[in-house]
Length: 276
Ligand SMILES: C[S@@+](CC[C@H](N)C(=O)[O-])C[C@H]1O[C@@H](n2cnc3c(N)ncnc32)[C@H](O)[C@@H]1O
Image 1 (spheres, rainbow, N blue to C red):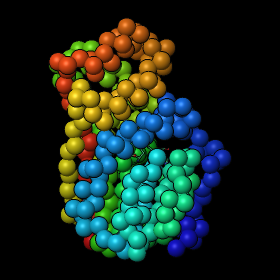
Image 2 (image 1 turned 180 degrees about the vertical axis):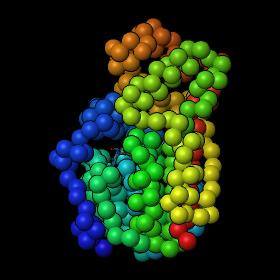
Image 3 (image 1 turned 180 degrees about the horizontal axis):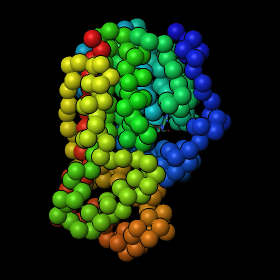
Image 4 (image 1 turned 60 degrees about the horizontal axis):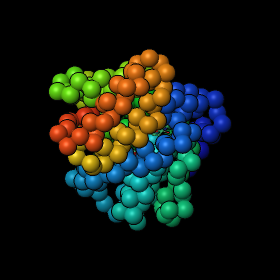
């Protein structure tokens, strides 16, 4: 299969690829972004792999990893599917390397403008991507057409339904400021809860399923590292935009070192559906 057959338009320099995500607080240009993406992988790869195993991942599957980031999922899938292939798509592929595996193809392009031939994949996965995109339902409907009969679409996005009930005001304050800033950039941390399941169903998928993966902060684990990097990256901007004072930011982050602090922060909604 060639992407060109499907009419794909892609290229790092295209203006359409250079808005919101690519130029905002989570841009790959940020010096800590690779480290932040690696922390995200350490935090979530175990449950992502289990989700694939539970869907019956097979060595001959053709897989598409959307918004592949720093690439751990695509790389792992390439190892699991030696008789199949993996396409890793990202709007910015600087952290991906097709040399990791012979059956791995790296495609630079904006998902909103990329096409693949119908029925090309047995597994399509997107983690922490749909929440960044406008009108994710339209994209999901397109993406579902790229599944072969029996193929799975797996979508994972964090939701913020524990922020307002956090018993730690200083933590709640910095998380609200972060969520407001992300929202201003077009990232919707409520999307998955409100619309993910309907989007999978409306795309014609069946055998829908949903799992929750809550992130715990304060235990010195992967989510602590991820949140520290997140705030290191966006913190100065939150202060600069008067969303937080420097003292409030420091007070919130200090909780991560407090032995009396443990909290649930964002929860990932892991949803899936199958093409009949
Ligand atoms: C939060 S990161 C998640 C990375 C990876 N999925 C993971 O969970 O480890 C989102 C990724 O999606 C990519 N991305 C954002 N908007 C995109 C778009 N419109 N088309 C393709 N990739 C996009 C970003 O460049 C980034 O690598």
